[in-house]
Length: 569
Image (cartoon, rainbow, N blue to C red; front, side):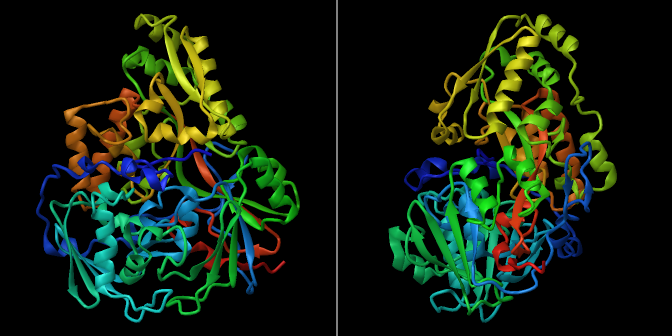
């Protein structure tokens, strides 16, 4: 199943990591501001988000409900097996930028800060983060934390680990998040200071993702080029890397020297099941005890099976149509607006997402605006184009633009029904309003190249994309339309938009940052830079023997497997 690449190529091959590097321009030209010291000291990362919605029907849908979590485990397990849709090419944390890698790495390696199941940011390996001035972040580390191979966490390990992300030749998928970093220095045995070139409100949030992971300097250097593909990852998490059976599975073993709460299972086995039907059958038969990223076509079958429970939680994910070229018919904003108007979003949610989703006219989910004042949240969503179909007005726009009969090409793939059915829905919408929308089939194993390789996008005007935010902040997505941004595939450029991005990124106060983001959301909607389709929740299935896994997308950067244990059923 294709997934988002916030800010850069969130994709796979270790051999091509340098090509996947995040573009450093995302951090350029930040405008300096001055804040009172008291205001800076009061900045609370923990208050970044009020968390996922309470249990109950999701807005606009009666087909599913969002759950804040799953029941807590009542006992320990010898082991449990987790279904994974693909085998990671590497578990090196600097390449942990897609679902398979992060689902595993989040349980083995830990970051300076931690994303919680409520999608807030809390202390991680750093027990305290302070911001003494607009361009400095100081991280005070926990004492007595041990790596899997026995060493003790120190400031030197942090400087080394973050330095690997900063190294322009290292091929880090998170490199652009460090483009505004001037220096990372040891300011005490258990203290590290990060000096920024200019104020940057996103940097401290990304320290709760794989961008902020800390591994043993000695362990990484000892492994050399083999780090992440064999042996130990030498991190500090509740599990350590066990046996890796290439092409079949990865085993994690409980780390008894963990500084935090002991993992409830002695072992976790991640089984690679690339075929959606095989993955579903494994969940039904008990071959796998659970899994995230459930095939949408299996939602109903699993929920009615009686062998377990299918949960939905906040995913910070939107399904969109990514506009990749404005050289043809889509160069006229009226044509982009017409396609958006003609799209049957509710039909797609029902067929393509198994009814578990909400048709939307917004590129961002409502949950990423949780830190904004109510009036700012209203400003971000009020006045956006309607998500309902309007075929007649769409026809008129195409005719007005002189685009009747013109060709638009969209990628499709058998990688998942969410992709193939969305491409078909766009084709159907185009045919009703006078456009000739053609499908170009992309092999599943080549689909991810669309995110990283300009040649793979040649001849395409658009492709389906599910985008997930790695932080609880709308700027994670909205920065994509800044001039030169990695996912700004269509080459959109507007100095006013760029200036707003710069202003928002440099603004530590959530209310002021979100106010600028609301203006960006309106601008992106007016220009139809991508076509928003639906909000898509996280899905997790647990059979009757296990419980405790989070329902939210926090599992990408939170040690979720440590909470999975025996269910009291």
